[in-house]
Length: 149
Image 1 (tube, rainbow, N blue to C red):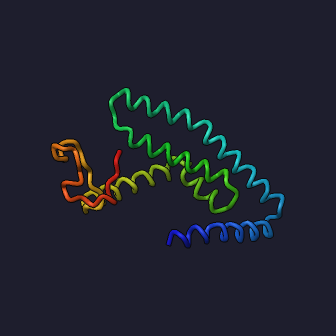
Image 2: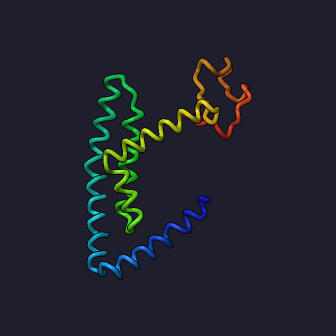
Image 3: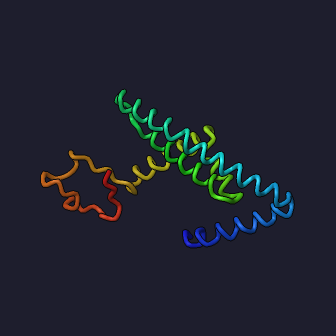
């Protein structure tokens, strides 16, 4: 499936750009590409500082930085997608940039992660859960599913 997505996405982008160019004209499509790239650059530039300030404020208060990290990642990824030329990348980029859709994505991602933790798809290893030698392998864990944070 990922290889199909990697190969199919650029093909679909090219076909959509050609169809949209025929429908709206090449000048309008070029304007859309330039404007979306400019918006993507502004998103990256202005939200980078905001993200760092939110992260520092959350750490100073002793709060969890998970929301700030996920929001920052989605804003960054959305900005990069807006810079790339293409209709689909612009749509996905705007979905990641708008606060309401970003909030929904964060909510759904959090629910999916909780579900995976409950089902055992994600195992959380804390210092208290590891043996005295500190080696998580000695607890018969699947090494391919361990994420060291």
